[in-house]
Amino acid sequence: METFFAITVQLSKGMSTSLQIFALTLLFSIPLGLFVAFGRMSKHGLLRGITKVYISIMRGTPLMLQLYAVYFGPFILFGLPLTIQYRATATIIAFSINYAAYFAEIYRGGIESMPSGQYEAAEVLGLGKVHTFVRIILPQVIKRILPSITNEIITLVKDTSLAYAIAYTEMFTLAKQISSARGSLVPVFVAGLFYYIFNFVVAFIMERVEKRLSYYEIK
Amino acid sequence: MKLVEIKNLSKSFDGVEVIRDISFDVEQGDVVAIIGSSGSGKTTLLRCATMLERVSGGSIYYHGDCMVETINGKIQYASRDNLKKIRRHYGLVFQNFNLFPHMSVLNNILEAPVKAFRQPKEETREMAMKLLAQMGLEDRADAYPCQLSGGQQQRVAIARALAMQPDVLYFDEPTSALDPELTGEVLKSIKDLKQQGRTMIIVTHEMEFARNVADRIIYMANGVIEEMGTPEQIFNNPQSEKTKSFLGRTLY
Ligand SMILES: Nc1ncnc2c1ncn2[C@@H]1O[C@H](COP(=O)(O)OP(=O)(O)OP(=O)(O)O)[C@@H](O)[C@H]1O
Ligand SMILES: [Mg+2]
Figure 1: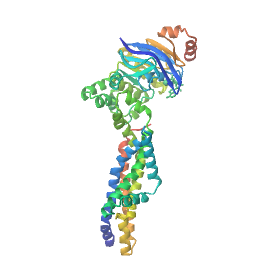
Figure 2: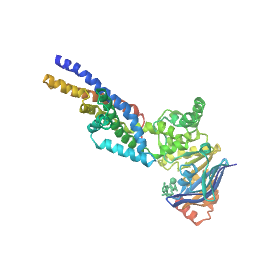
Figure 3: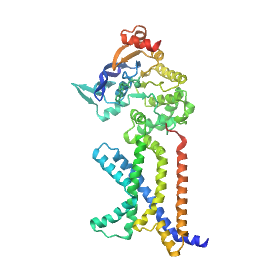
């Protein structure tokens, strides 16, 4: 039991790093995804094309590879130094642009599934485009896409461990280090427990949000 | 005073003309019923008149203000600002209500006047409650659309349109999506509006209702006005063969 606590204390720094990657990625990718979705649905062919390619690359290549690209890219292209601080930044950038692509497709699906009658009712009542989107469309889209968003968020919790690829010491990297130092698998097990509890909390919160929005039905 | 003036209106989709050469006027207090078989262009006409669809030709005026004009084949819509003003002259009630499902009945009604047009909240709320009372729904103000029957939802939609204080109210088959036992309550609400002198243009398949409520009937066939007249003229003494056979099919 004592070792268990000792390990948890040792791991705690990694936990906070993982939490940080998680929180910052959501903070940036959720709004960024909305802009990408707008680009993807834009009237301008070029913008639509660019976002389409962007989304297909983000979804079609491993996140780990994207991490490498963001981390080593500036060094290879411009000869900028590889600093330890940049590992954190690179991780957040890579995760954010990757998740923004996934969120964008979810948003797009939600927005395109809205019946045209909602737009038309708003238009005849004289509501402007922005008003219609923010007050009429978006709240309903959020309700529709919440289950898919929950899936992405749960995947993100587990994906944070990929930061080890560029030696950014989050939870899992640390667990492996401690594991080999102690010659025991307990730290890795504790790490697994941490991800599980984390996702348990995420699922619980998302369920609450879904309940909150269940006061009405969408046909 | 001509509230609505429609001249030589036409609309094509991908080169296929769906309505053509539609002309009629509506005076203050008029109730006009538009009848005709499926696909004759009734919805398209209302959608052009409410700017949900751009016309392919013709002119539309509200209160003498030009919404769209076609001169020498050139279609010219009014400026954005003018269109904004003109839009306030009319309201539209849809076949499938199109209420905002995430808002309570009261907020459905208040959204446009209070949130978009910045009318004073308390006064508008009182007016909304009066409209709901008129529709027999004052006790459902806090309900959500999914908790209401179709007939109740449609009456909320009518109240929502009226809250913008339009001069003329369009209805596109307001009872077609309803179970037969619920159509009566909606038709009755529309009759009450006529008693108050509301100007209305109603697309309907309910012939009995059209006959009782309308001052004028427009019969559309294949995208044109085949015949137009008082209910007496159209129902008792139709001139066109098409009208006769349409009425023969629907009435008996
Ligand atoms: N957006 C569109 N694109 C192409 N064709 C259309 C479109 N909207 C309507 N049409 C066609 O125009 C014709 C008239 O349709 P409209 O919906 O106006 O008829 P309607 O008289 O309202 O019929 P109903 O009684 O069934 O509602 C139909 O042949 C229809 O297929
Ligand atoms: Mg129709």
